Image (cartoon, rainbow, N blue to C red; front, side, top):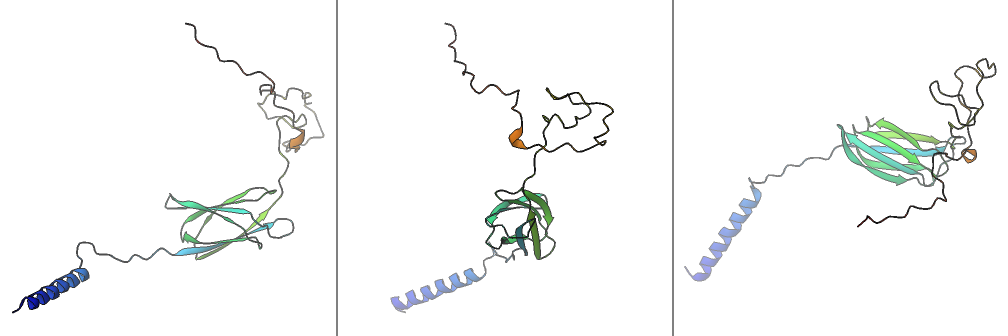
Length: 194
């Protein structure tokens, strides 16, 4: 046999060995693992009093499965007030939070049991705040009275027992007396004695 014949035989053997080795890779067998089934979540954000959609509301999805957090994702609503997501596995727990300027923040927990989940969120305007500084608000049983509040009468017939405190407008709240004055000079640092 000639030299060229030997080279051809060696090349054919090497290619055959490489092909056989590539087909039966016993060291690192790869098994196909299908991804988990995901749920289609559709969140519609509307105004609570007229049902019109809210544009650019932030919809925050926080997911967990088997007690382990899987992460979070924030989407903005479109002009129809909708935000859609197809990434959350079926069987996960979903914490949904909706934030929109000029509305109360919404939050609730859901379990994704099926392949589709439709959630309608009705947003409301913020309400007035309760204040402990309101002189007309009934005091808690063991709470000290407000500094300038008149003493409450024990036989007051106008207030029902266990009534809800009156709502306070936050713009009319008195200043915090425990806060330091805003114009107080800052203390100067002193050097240690030598």
